[in-house]
Length: 265
Image (tube, rainbow, N blue to C red):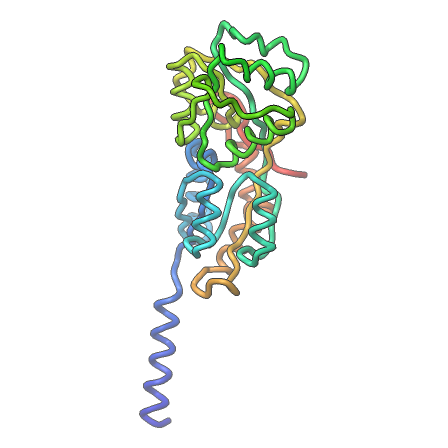
């Protein structure tokens, strides 16, 4: 073998070793991280495979934007229409149903808008549009924010423009905190609510409506779009979550005796 061929071989080998890494990066919505679920899954997966799973917790909109820049190997979010658009635009390989829970509306314990006695979401949103009652919006392009916008739209109502509609631009836990301090109403995913500790000023006022279903999807970022992503490792992790030990761990994950997420049969 000539010296030139040896040098070329070593360059290729060195480049490959630089590219390969023993971890994957997950761009994830905050609820899967802040509840502690992804920590449990990541720890067990590392024990079984030696592959580290590094999670970046941001709102769904930011997670998708980051993944579109190639800043991650896997996307876990909860806005199905945006997930499908992500794939349609060539950024993701395939969407899998990962798990689900639901959204709930929480508010002051004395429930001044009387939404707990409402018959449906349209009636509730109409009550919450009344300027006498404060409503907290995350206003951050997250999955929860997108859901809130759809509730106004589906109720044929304009988003309030007065001071009773408070935009926080914050994560879910901070939005709940602000709701408690201001005695306001807020839409939240159930997982974050269960894991939230400072509940003394608020309670669940509306729940278990089919329209509040909250599905989470998981997508591997496309190696055709970004050559540096760890697609093979990502696919193995996804398989482990939807058909392996990870699925069992998701169903077994509880806080305060309550299950936070549910997988599909």
